[in-house]
Amino acid sequence: MANIKSMRGVVVGTKMSKTVVVAVEKQKHHPLYRKTYRIMVKYLAHDEKGECKLEDKVRIVETRPLSKLKRWRVTEILTRGEVPEVKPEEVI
Image (cartoon, rainbow, N blue to C red; front, side):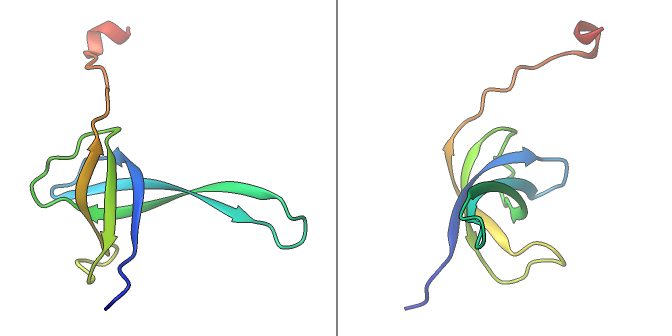
């Protein structure tokens, strides 16, 4: 059976149709200094129904190439994000 890669991340961009930008936080270990540090990697993921909103926590799985940069798809929304709706007049 094939080993399917999956990751959890946070939706940070929803400007494209059927595509979301998912930020995944990873921990790496420095080979010389033996220090653990965090990096943030952004992936383009396919969202067929357009259900994802900003700050949603989602699970993405690896899939065949769907476009030049899109190789992941959203399988489920784990938790919904709470982003307040702010009108431009309220910011000023």
